Length: 429
Image (tube, rainbow, N blue to C red; front, side, top):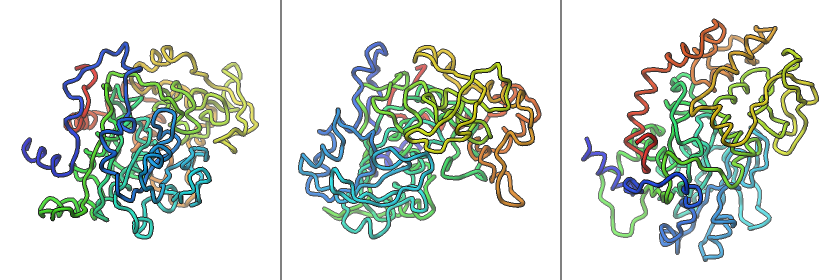
């Protein structure tokens, strides 16, 4: 089995050698971590003379300069930019449909891959020799960039085009936790049987998708065929090249230099996101429309002796839930260190359980599907959880410990799969 995996990795150009044997002292890691995009000497030669398609957003920086600007100045021929949720410049609301347009700064066409169109078309790919992917992820299953990555990988395989992934640190990459998604609850906010917090960089995750056979049937078939043929000299064919970060480990606490999306404006929101995004599937405000989304949450009908706030229209949240209504709930904000201490490197369910207990109209705590004869997978809360069990456990008054025990053994099974694809020294080791 080890030999088979090694052959697969070599054949696809996956960079498993990374920094396996280069542990970093955490005290100075933040200052010395170098994202893959900044390691131009590792991938620039693969782009020269090629027509390039780039999947990027506002986090795709080389130092203080956008990756697209950097590559253009170095003479790289970029033909098209692909944008994820929130758009290429990262200003759209969550879930907002962003159409195609021409980027004013670069003059390049931008094709949105969020909404009805989630992968490049044949027309988009006609002038592309190589695909490049550079996005800052936050390491949480329902953050849609891993779903966009999967669709992009499938496109590369189907069109037999090399894919270069510029890896970035995972700010929640120092633990693994949460329920593993069940296949019936697969959606764009969760496409694979992984826990809510999966503890992998996008480079590691991409290798797992490819070698575990978790891509679309068409893409998996293309990959199997690729493994059985010989390549003609100079022929263009799919390869996955992961350009790893330097000096990163899974013990690193990496503070993002740029907000990854409008409603994760600071690292404290990123740390709380795995625990409080569940409120998106309830009638409570999850803090959109405040200066601390996912750190603040509540509802007008909760006890008025709790923290008080009023959601308002803001950039990236022009029409937030409960806009203009006085809400009562919780403010979990604090310094980075204080928030890390509160989260305890695990998903915190106590606030969700307490909010349900205090909510007077429990039949309407969870946002109900609009369709008649709705199935469990039609509930947005269940799609976030990846199952119907968590909602039922909350209704039954199960304790946090009881709920956490129900995540096994699937969580332990995933941890074993994860270990096969790590490019960096793991936490606790």
